[in-house]
Amino acid sequence: MEPLTIDVDEIDESGQAWQADLPREFVDSALRGEPPTEFHAAGAATVRARLTKIGRSVLVQSRFTVPLEGQCKRCLKKVRLDEPIDLTLTYVPRAGPAPEPPRRAGHDRAEPEPAASFDAETVDEEPYSGKTIDLAPALREQILLAVPPSPVCDEACKGLCPTCGKDLNADDCGCEKTTLDPRWAALKSIQLEKKEK
Image 1: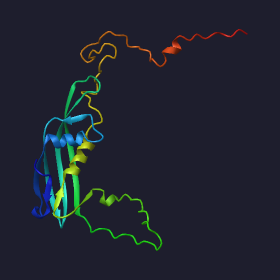
Image 2: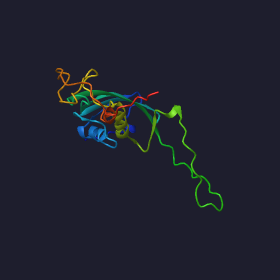
Image 3: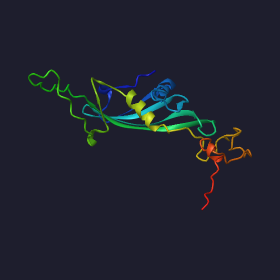
């Protein structure tokens, strides 16, 4: 597998094209991780990106497709999708380690860290260390964000008959459609008595 790393020193200031292969195993590792999705990789993908360097920060812009395969939740037919993936991130050099908070005399434990706050200006920034940027974590994340919740062959799919199992997309099976929920079946035998005045 070609490494999904970028050498910052090799990027032209004006921007350049970058390409890497995403093998089927990489896509599957994202889809079948914890928690697993209902899809698996239908093949490999190719990431094409544009890299723009501003000082030591690098803007990565990419749009590519990932082939996915799953089983329709209604009729159990195979579903194949080419899901578009968008990635726009600015990688910024990681600052040095934060200084440790001072300890008060007589206290062995450090003060609890304040809760992290959301900074809208840095939401599309990702820190990196050294001279290389590893795109693998961001690509895995974007694949998971793009995956649909459940495979469905068609929004109008009628599914399978719960009684006989026939594919209702092909033809009506003729089975009785009004079935009583088994949780309410016991109430059917209850007979109410009228009160006499």
